[in-house]
Amino acid sequence: MKHAIQMNKKLIVLYLLVLMGTMGCSKKDIVIENTSISPDLSNPIIQKISNQTWYKRPGTAEGQSKLIWESQQNMPSSSESAANLLYSMAFQNITLNRNGTSNMLFVPPFMTHVYIHNSGNWRVAKTEPNALVINTKTPVSNSTAMTKVLKLEAKDQISTLNLSMDFGYRLLEFNFVNKSFVSSDPIKIEAEDFRWFEKQQISTTALHAKDFVGTWASAHFINPVNTAFYGGEYKKEEIIQVSHIEDLLLATPTFFSGQAFDLKADGSASIAYKLFETTLNGVEDEIPDGKTVVSNATWEIKGNKIFIYSDEALFYSLGEMLFHLPVYGEQLLTVGYYGDLPIRIQKGRYYAIELIEKTDQGFWSRITTNDGVFYSFLFLTQLDHARTINIKNAF
Image (cartoon, one colour):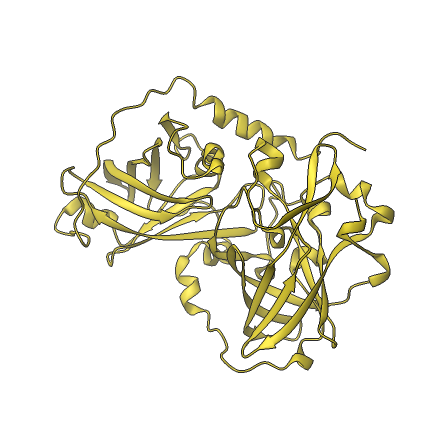
């Protein structure tokens, strides 16, 4: 048995480069600010930066975040200790709406088909000029950041914004522009826009079980790819839009790496995973006969939702695997090991699937689970049961 997960080395190198940037940082005093009840748009600077999206420029020195100082004390979660990777490599843009709401977009470098939109709210600080307070969800925690506009200038119809964000345990500086340089691909442009969620119409019509007997799979289950730094163009059906996630690093959704739901007429079901082929490179060699790992489950229809339940759902933590972060999670059970990596299952896992739009190939869906809300296309496919193995027998 191998003694280490053979993850893409680029990810490790990039993390170490980011980590090196934390050295030699000094902490300044933190001042707790009073804030107004709603955004004060009388300030011309605040007015100019609001109501538009500000983009980082990935792949350039100007697009990288700059760590001013960091303290391990008072971090809201252990995964925050590795969050510099997310701010440096995954953070794409920020929007401050004039109604006081905000949105931050993250696209993880190890899952470039996943677009995580974190919503929040913001208020103008009273005691600091050109400053505001953002309360927001991030991919790993709930955070409050004192945000200061350091520089704002316009040139050749492009505005450049330099601001700092003080989270209380980390001070970062960012450079943004009010134009996206990421891609001209309309699929990616649509995925970047948080307003996309407003256009999704969830069906309220009662569903019938007979219409959903079969195997429903995400695109990356049908055509597994190595999601670490996969740089190809994606089809619309391959994109996963995320409106909520609890902790990307400590409780990483297995759905992101390819998953299928096999629903039988008698109410029994199985959940099949491609995590070992797409993300945990090397582990698939340990699975007998190269079989697909599955968990036993049950399913039922309640009104307009498909509910799937499992007491042996696969659980994994990218933060544990890469950074040795301590894992948290309810009702976890270790069923085996790959090297030093525990293979765990979780009781009480559920998926509530709602229909958005049906097509000849499958249907667009909103999937709510214990720790996330995802929008994804599910293809109607077939699962070869002769080539599956239950997770409790695989390791």
